[in-house]
Image 1 (cartoon, rainbow, N blue to C red):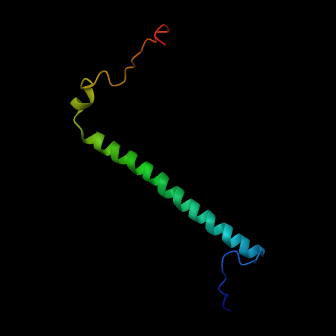
Image 2: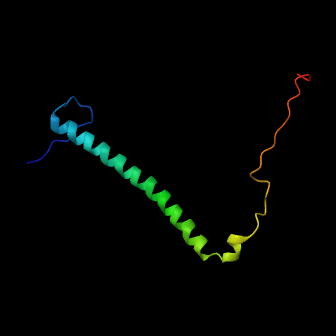
Image 3: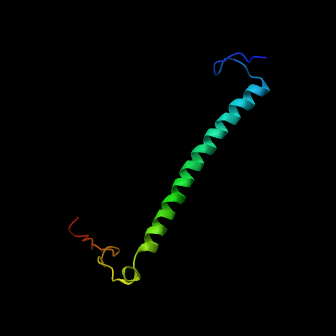
Length: 81
């Protein structure tokens, strides 16, 4: 038994067709989610491997940019505005 080729949105609203379209879209979304989440996990694993290869002295070193996380407070002169 051969299944006739159908165009998407050809007016067939049978339960089987709707389930097939929904299942296909869910499968694509699942695949994209796996790729994105797997990429994030893979990136974290690569960073962990690289950090495990570094000597312990590099982890105990003083921060070369100590002001990189500081904030600057700028005074606003109300008379100048």
